[in-house]
Amino acid sequence: MTEEERLVKNNRIREQGRLTREKRKGQICRVYRVKIDISHFTQAQRVHMKMLFVEAKWLYNDALTFMNDNDHDINDYDTTIHTVYGLDKDKLPVTHELEYLGSQMKQSIIQGIKHSLKGLASLKKHNHTVGSLRYKSDYVSINLQQHRLTYRFYDEWHIGLQGFRERIRIRGANQFWNIHGIELANAKLLNLPDGYYLAVTTYCNKGGETRKYKPEIGIDMGIKTTITTSDGRKYKVLIEESERIKKCQRLIARRKKGSSNQYKARKLLRIAYHRLTSRKKDIANKIVHELLEHEHVYMQDENLSGWHKGLFGKTIQHSVSGLVKAKLIHNERVTVLSSREPATKYCPLCGKLKKDMTLADRIYECECRYREDRDVHAARNMILLSKKNTCGTQGINAFGEDVRRRQKCCNADLVELGSHQSARGGSSPKEESRG
Ligand SMILES: [Zn+2]
Image (tube, rainbow, N blue to C red):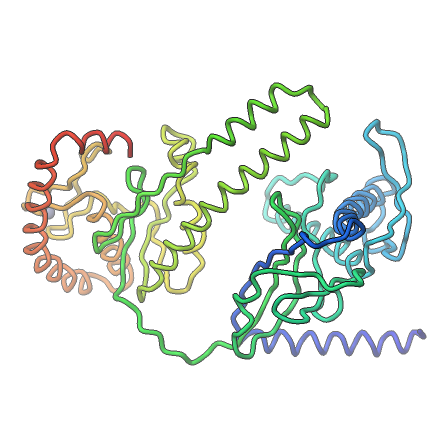
């Protein structure tokens, strides 16, 4: 290719990229994960799949050595090479042949390093302390840059991968297969503890669909109840560390250090932990979905990691509040209140701040005879305080009226609830201590 042809080609690619970015502005990006079914793989295919990740690791580590040893620029790294250098487990130099990795996969691995370097550089610019990139012992995600080139969907049940001659069976494409006008962009081949997956990035046009939302809602995150909504719903989620995890940990401790039996036990532990996170993610997704059925969600930027360090470490670790918060925080229909706002102390009726609230007080009681469940009260205050910040006192007064009206019926509810609880007798304190 002559220099002139190269420039023409580069210009074409740049123009194409610009057009795509323009188009993406009006589209919604969603990532779907499908599972690769290896139950019908031949032995050669199994090896191929496994070696993709091993070779990716070799190439990645070789590129790091290239940068570190000679102080080279990563842009000078030749991605067309077939031999890389590395160290075996006794730290002796070895050469590896790259047999399975496709050209675009190689490029995307180096591209990944460039992205990471860029990220580190920008962190450094903002005065964060940064280290350097470290060698990997596992490479778990290979980027497949282009649909129809590095990977392709033949139908709902089969895909092709660069380098594989046969079609590969997948499961789960029904999640997006029938969506009208969907476009497939890049995908990631994942090597997770419980199998291989393909995470496909898709784009579809923002439809002019008018969804009917439920009225706005405030949420309060807590330790006793994970999430409480302003309309009185309570989500209590606590996922215990499974027996299996404890068993695996004991197994690892008993095995000889560095032995292959210990390695196997570690693999089992990874699978067990993966299952635990999957369960958490599932629950978090369901909660987020329910919350986003409301027109607008108000929440507080609670310092969950602070709780984590403090007394409640274990409880928070096994709850899903962190996941829910992370999912909500970037949504455009969610308002996040600063953590300094006195959501629990503020009285919506008289506007006084109750100073002597402790964690043990489960009911909020004000001098002005306002009385409400502590968490529900905080959740309602999320809406109130957000509005106070945006539209001044007028919004509050209107809301105050609303509270006063609601207060009448809520009081009736509360009395009923109280009598119900006392009728149950001894069971409720026990519940409290568990939560
Ligand atoms: Zn009051």
